[in-house]
Image (cartoon, rainbow, N blue to C red):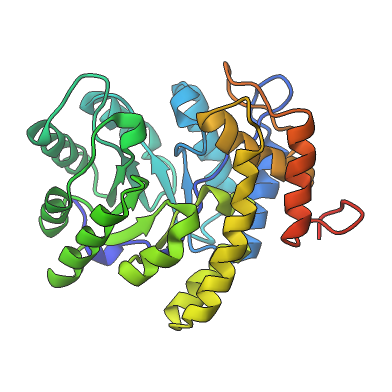
Length: 315
């Protein structure tokens, strides 16, 4: 079980998983990425999330990622880990496997594949929370699990100490605002983080405590600047930073022949390769990397927002 006192706030990027040309974990690139995030001033790191391609990894690969990430971070910031799977017993198995690592908590979605309703979802989160002393975060991502977590249920789980916070990647701004208002009225038992990269400014105005932006792998410092400006209630600067990050987010629309993570995560990986952080932009099988003219367009966007200098080098 957990309490809000353990809640993680601020900028917590969902870590990408760089791969070698052979599809193995690229440890040097992973270390460079973690170093980039820490240098950018992030408040935490979320390993084994959707941006980390967790749905494609077996148990051994998941453990290898956690070992590399926690070893590289070495306690400099909190690390939370996704324990995402289709049903409760498998999620708890992932929790058990991760217990030996220095983690600040776990992130779980609603169960999926088998159709579940509110009762089953609530039992799921309560069972996972009962299996660990570390904080548990609810990951609201209906595009992947086909269930939208309701504000009332999330608030109840927070008030009961089952979850410490919510990572909201629903894209439902009305629901997020309702959750933020109800959470505030209840004394803020939940820490609320948005994963909606281009409207983080609106989430802050609604009451978000931070963000979990996949694009934060590419430009962690930009999201950190926006968070600091929001804390200072400098909304003009928040808008400047968000507008620039929205311009950068256009990289995900350049590969017109891909959808889903092959386009989004693929664009992030391609950008990091062009910035010299990753050695490749290889994706987990069966996805293929972005190639051709889309790479050139991604480089143009990186240069336009100041991440590449005129010679094509990392700025």
